Picture 1 (tube, rainbow, N blue to C red):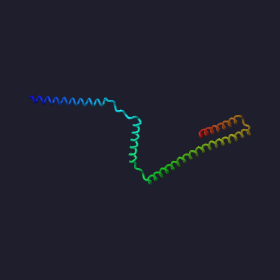
Picture 2: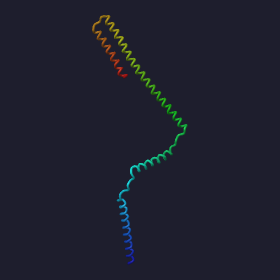
Picture 3: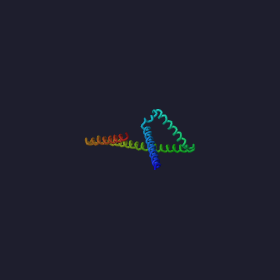
Picture 4: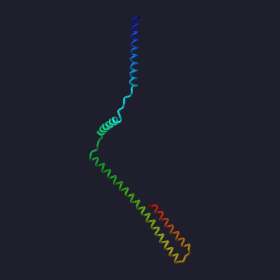
Length: 159
């Protein structure tokens, strides 16, 4: 029994020692954490390291690039030039078409004004020679006003 007591006492002592060691380890760990944090290097040192890392990564990535051969480059360049020329011709065609339409509208408006002016002049001459009344002169004035209004309308459209 005495031996059993010694074994139990030894086990208790061993457990106490283990518990003390574990507690000491926790205290040491906490002490490390409670110390002042490690100071960061200044901004210039960190920026220098970041720039160095960037160029190192850049060099590694640029080695992975597969460059096309000369024949492929020339073929793709020709396609791009051809597409640009076709698009330029289409835009030029649309521009010329719109210019033609606007010019036709201007000529139509100017031609209508000249026709109206000729009719107005002919009507005025007829009214003067026939000795008509003041009502005919008012009609001639109304026709002239309408023609000038049409010309003004198309002038504002053209700009």
